[in-house]
Length: 444
Ligand code: HEM
Image (cartoon, rainbow, N blue to C red):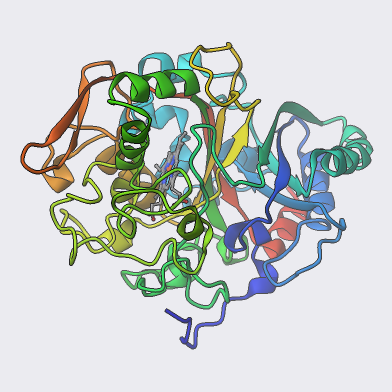
């Protein structure tokens, strides 16, 4: 559906990382900073604001490198943002991701006490993400930037994670990712589903009306307006275990691929079951004009084609009859793989750390990210499947199952292990460009 509304967002004030799709392929890096000296922290904001690109710019001030910056609650505090203002930020943001572990299913081996330090600790203040067409150009850019932040002795880089998007756009389990995106009113960026009405800008950009007519703006206005919340999670993927599980539960290679598709709702090529129910269709999978043009309710209300419990139908039930209103739980996702890919066909774990740096963008941490993670991914009540969890992402303990509706009898996968383990993450606020400069100019 085209964006024919009169809403015009102030694109030159919104960080590019919020609304604009990333290029493909690319290399990216997450660098986390701790601020020990408030003035140095503010100087970092000034320096960064000069290189962050807005959603209106097609050219980055750093050439082929694109930079985004976000802050945690502790980061805003370290810069000296007044408590009365901090109190106007979303409750979940103020708590931080580690404190929300129970609600998010981050238990057992995914629990914060097992996270990779310093993730989930009050030391994480600033999150900087840089993107370039390849790792050589990315490293060159980081090398150029290093003296600028190393000269600030009161600011320390405390963690770094490199990641990449392959030309095939596949995530470590082997599926094409980065397909489905909502359209946002006034953003000028088309959504990927022509059958979805664009969402109100306030679902993704603070300071604008959202789907319920409300306007969320953390205070003061100059700080909150045109910002958004960003969630990032380092999710370790057990690729060998996933492959073995498919192999052990299928009757042969063709069945294995069908099972993989039933679990995800898409074939590995990205072709949706909804449009290609019986076999993969790589042409469809790669075609951005067709690979997300579908709904569920009219043709497949009971999930015979796309199971109600598969990953994409849980993540976005579209028009399917579920408890709740799917439009209130949409999100912009920016997943990027990390670690070396496990070579094709290998079924034994090689001990390498690989997975997804999952990123969420949206203005409602509670009703968007946390709701999807807890009610849709880690529960099945919303579509009548009891406590069944997402087969890919669910916090399984080996006793869960997954049902593939089928005639004459359904197919049931049992003893699902945990394929994805949380290594850590943070809730962040990504300010607008004016707000970044304002943070840089703060005084006591
Ligand atoms: C390692 C973990 C994950 C893997 C391997 C994974 C994989 C995928 C893949 C392959 C797709 C289909 C491609 C696309 O539409 O872009 C997808 C879609 C999606 N995922 Fe995930 N994902 C992961 C984590 C998450 C998390 C943590 C969430 C949210 C809590 C999430 C929510 C979604 C949503 C909302 C969609 C789009 C559904 C649609 O609109 O059709 N995913 N994911």
